[in-house]
Image (cartoon, rainbow, N blue to C red; front, side, top):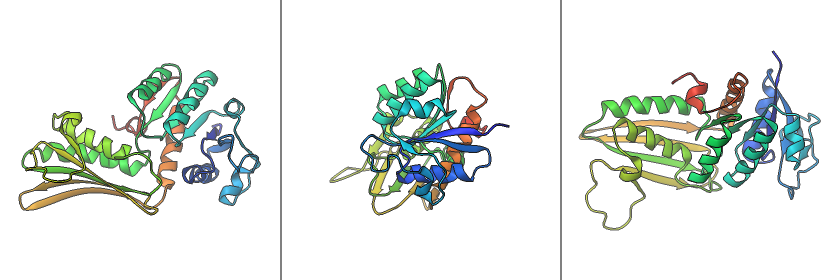
Length: 268
C-alpha cells in the first residue's frame, strides 16, 4: 500500500509540531509539505527540525505548491485560514482533515459545499478516546433522563481563542439530542448574580482557561444523593494527531463526502 502524503497547516505551532512528529512515526505516512503564513520566521526551515528529526521538507507559504504534492491536508489552525485552505483543497482535489473549531454557520456551510467534491473529515475532536466518550454520553443521557441536572465543564490552555470548546459544545449537543431537547434553547453559558432556581431542563457550560492545560472535559449528571461524571483528560496533543492520521487513512477510500470521527471509527 502506498504511503499517504500529508501536508500540515500551521506546522510551527504546538499542534503542527505534534502532527509532524506523528507523521514521521507512522510507517504508512510521509510528510509531503509543511505550511505557515507568509510572515512566519520559520519559512525555509526544515520542518523536521521542529521536532528534532530533520526530513528535508522546507516550511513554505506556497499553498498551491504544497497541495500539488499532497494527498491530504491536516488543518488545526483558525477558521479564516482553514476556509482558505478548504478552497485550495477543492481546486487540487486533495482531502482535508479539519480539527479547527469556532466556525460560523456560513463557514460550516462552505465546508458542506466543498465536501460535495472532495472528502472532508470535520470533527470537534479527533482523539479516539473523546469519541468513545461521545458514545458513552448518548447512552448515559438516555438512562439518566429524569431527575438529573446536567453540566458540561471544560478546561484549556490560556491561548485557546474560542469558548466553550468545540468538544464541549458537541457533548452538549449529543446529550440534548438524546433527551429530545434543542441545545440552543436549553443551554446556559456561565452564571452570575441572582440567577434564580436552576430549570430542570437546562444544560450548563463552564469554561476554564489557564496555563498549558491541553484539554479536559467533564459532563456531570447531578441527581438526588449521587453524581455521575464522565471525563476525558488529554495529557498531550498526540491523541489528536493520531486521530487525524486515522481520518486521513479513512478518506483514502472515498472520492467525496463530509465525515466525522464517528464515521472514521465505524460507530455509525
